[in-house]
Length: 398
Image (tube, rainbow, N blue to C red; front, top):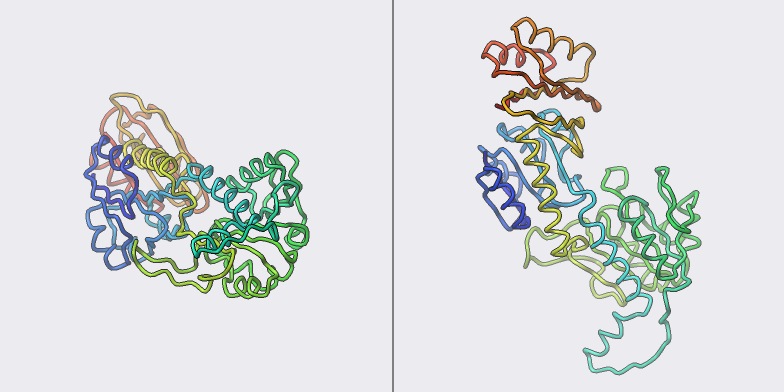
């Protein structure tokens, strides 16, 4: 089995895959579509981060690819529909870097509220400006969190421990933690918050959700943070409101277009603005988070390739079935239509194959049945299963 790891994925991911018997190739940068297609020949497992786009064209060309690991939270850089059509499992790390992102957000809220960025710039320029003007404590101020998932909810807890009052808005029904208060609309949150922090996911419907209208509805003198996705915010509108003084500080970690590798020039209309913190997509980039992500995602890839387990896959039905020694496992991904399980079991019975254990799960257009049998199947059995019109992909694990 061959694994290709891109974008400087943590060493522990490579160690874990090598320990599981994979031949691992590592690159410290992202790949464009043509280069990626060339590299994917003969690759069974691909690991990437946020700067490599796995397109439908690349998936079509990757005939050996079994699984993809996104060593980050987001998976919008992967064509999940095509992955489903090809029977390629996709895994990510939805929890591993949560604390790192939250700590960055907290530090930036404090730095911007105290205007430490301006003080730092002045001091490096030799200017001594000892003044409390425009500098505030975060205690008692209102933090509005847009998106109350894993990161937003943990930010809520830590911010409240600092004495902030927390509001949140989410399109999903989320349980408020501590004393946080849910807002019925985004406009309600914007009108009340001293600090607004975005923590939405990468679904396409979130593109451009925060623009001129939303910045205009924020309180005069408020602060804005985006540590979620670059394409959700109009940076031109943000710049205009900072220059007008309506927004007095901002922190941005993600951008609509980002350099593919270290050392490339970063271009943004937000460069050079006062009391604005710009970071190169490092919200989850702590050694602790990257190590945990490496362990977590590599473990998911190993378990899928070795045992067929799809727990926490973002695109395949979830199945986890303990494996017994001496058995052969059939992994059958199929179109989610009625009667497939009965057809599979009938076919096995016709060929005298005894089922030792079995588990079926469905998700959207796909069904996934894991079947343990007592002995290796004959070529006729394998060919018959592959020939079923509903079959997307069949694997046999000895």
